[in-house]
Image (cartoon, rainbow, N blue to C red; front, side, top):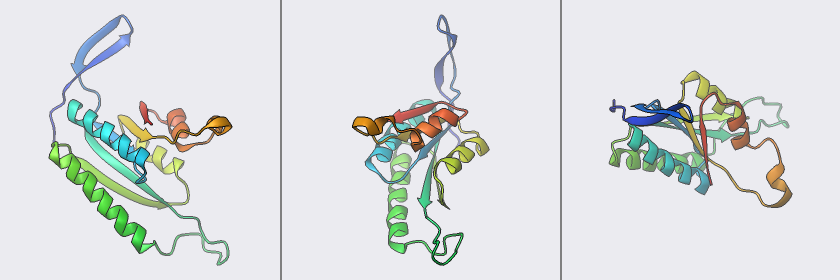
Length: 163
């Protein structure tokens, strides 16, 4: 569904702001079914509704290749997990439809998380990423390498982290 672009305040410098057509057309929500990604989806839905943008959710089914059998790829996906995720993705579609927001759910099986997200951002020319982040207490909060940190550091577009 093609939606009309809405207006957005765009600043070339802090003292040079204008109202223009929105530059946000494609919003990506990396979605893992956690409370954090559900919260991010809710933010993305509101933003998509406000700016007339489309949402894509990207679910990476993380599978570690079996070293015991020397298999370098996933040979089967847990049917129970798959069924549950399909049900959840349908709920996301229903929520978006309720507000007239176009949504596409993509699922990928991969042994990495960060690279497929960054690749998707580039390949599909995403304008904004809205993603959840697990807040870690104590010294763990300084650990480099989290997916959210990696996306913020390497994505070519703005990234909104939702807690």
